[in-house]
Image 1 (cartoon, rainbow, N blue to C red):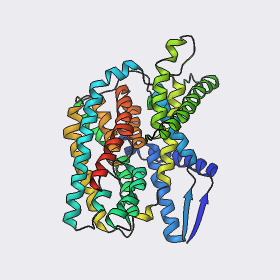
Image 2 (cartoon, rainbow, N blue to C red):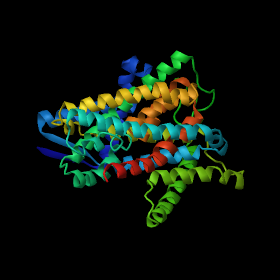
Image 3 (cartoon, rainbow, N blue to C red):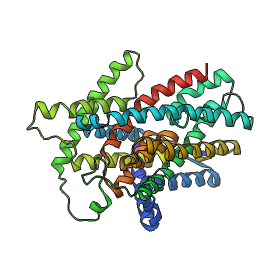
Image 4 (cartoon, rainbow, N blue to C red):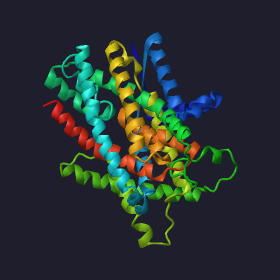
Length: 400
């Protein structure tokens, strides 16, 4: 087996090609657009299958350098923060608390399902921890962080492999079912989005036209503001880490951007600010799509082999539980309206994938059906901040 490590610039370039491959396939297979499958998901899964073929049939393990992906994550969440007005945050107050509450309840349900199914299937001790909120709500990052602890506590030598496999399958499932769930809810209840500019991405109707009010000046101005927010986020993150608080860098950048966008325009009202501008929308959309393409194309699907059908059974049950919870709890609790349908698509990412997957699902829906401002404010705060704290507490209890 030979290993091919692709450098950063080449990995970034391939990610762009992967996105266009997905976009072309979506165009050729209209049902993918019909069910709001993001272009980056389509292309990323194709690329992951290509690397699997290279591994299985040609003995080549293709590995990508993902430094650009991590930077794109910062650009995306900073863009979300720059679009967050206090009026939106106030409007999202009660929905935010409701979403947080039902997400915390689901975290408990997910771990109980993992424990029950692992016991029924006779899986080794500690496996249930890896097939619940560790890998699904937590994703790859949480799995990598907790795998050594689970190995030490339960003597499970392949804890990392099991957790990564579960997180990978969860990410794929979340990417594929979010759009269809939202479309089902929208059609069933006759819902439609707000008639306003999207905060992330550009609607499909707009991209089919020929007008474009984005200039190099607006893009550079937006990049400057975004970079300043990220630089402040880096500095503040170091202070937070030194204080012993483990907070992801992208969450700090998100909070910094929220503070900036709700103070600077009032202190300097004549200063051009990118909130709700098409330039910021495009930068956020670009960052998210390339980030997702890089995340999916870098999945090492061969790591799923040898883990047996038990993993598939547990993930199938977790998926069924998640879909039922979304349809019968999340959507009704969030108001049975269009925002609730978009949040339902995002909840697939919270429950089975990751925050960027959740946002990508919601973006794909809003591009077709219209804006959902509150959804893009409250869901990242729940999935990228509060739920991580709750998950850490739950995992501490499970491995004690």
